[in-house]
Each structure stands twice: as structure tokens, then as C-alpha cells.
Image: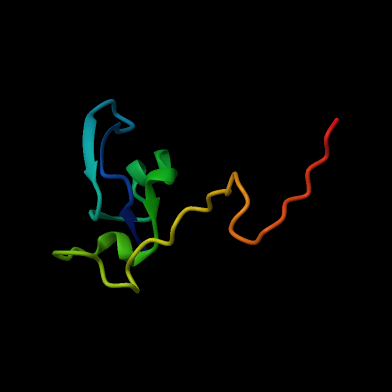
Amino acid sequence: MHVVYVKVDSAVVTLPDGTPWTVAKGQHYPADDPVVKANPGMFSPDARYGVNWTGPPPPELAEPPADVEQATAGPGEKRNVRRG
């Protein structure tokens, strides 16, 4: 059986029969569960979402930083700017 983990902090979803259902980060479900099929963006096969720890996460379990575009040039960096 393939297992997926909730990757959102907490959310209330609606089951196919209309029943509200709460999912919370770290819970695991079978990959073919109806709540997973109806909300695939809330789940991941990455087991790091199913692990709990106290304090800062170990480096191998920390989420990679989001790609953020730097708006200004860094020290010693030149930006090509086209003026119109």
C-alpha cells in the first residue's frame, strides 16, 4: 500500500458523501483514499511530512527554502538594465 502524508497545517475537506473531515499535517492516508483523490495538492508521498520532532528540524528534514527573486543587485553584482 502506498501512503501519502498531509502537508498542510490543518484543513477541513468534504468527503464524497458530503461529510466534513479534518486533516492535519503529518497524518497519513492510503494514496487511493477518496479524500486524497479529491484533494491531491494537500498530500505528498514525501515522508518528511509524517515525521514529528521537538526543536528545530534536523537539516535533512528541513524544507528547502522557496525560490525568491532578488530585486536588487548584491554586493559587487552588476545588473543589466535597459532604459526605454
